[in-house]
Image (cartoon, rainbow, N blue to C red; front, side):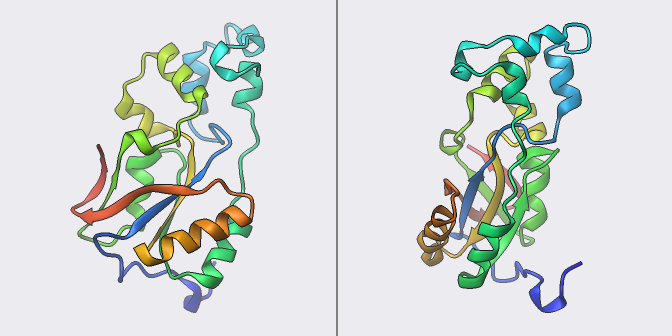
Length: 184
């Protein structure tokens, strides 16, 4: 439930607006049916004790069970000082299903794949599961737990506020004319 006067409006969203990423701590709580299948956890629970080199000394179990990050406090601080035009929590359905929910009709999110800071865990999952890049971005958060869309002149201020409140926020992409998400 949200007070009517506090509901965000994407009516002013326009080409050139900036999409800001708030990094996730890992898989969060989404896609675990696929994770269990990728690593055959039910038949081989000991796989959770393995430590793939890419995970920097963490076991697979530790990496998969990293606590879900909660963004409410830093996001509320941004909302106090910046006109946020859209917010998307990246849950099951990944980029392709979640980001469009916050977009104004006629707007698309253009994101360069090279700009997504993908944690090694997702690379391990993709390799072990033989999962296509499209399916990875359509199932998992790929290291982005939430995105905010703001005017270009507000982007640096929003990022500074988020960083001051412990988020390693960064520019992820821009709004362009179109529909949905364009990963380039």
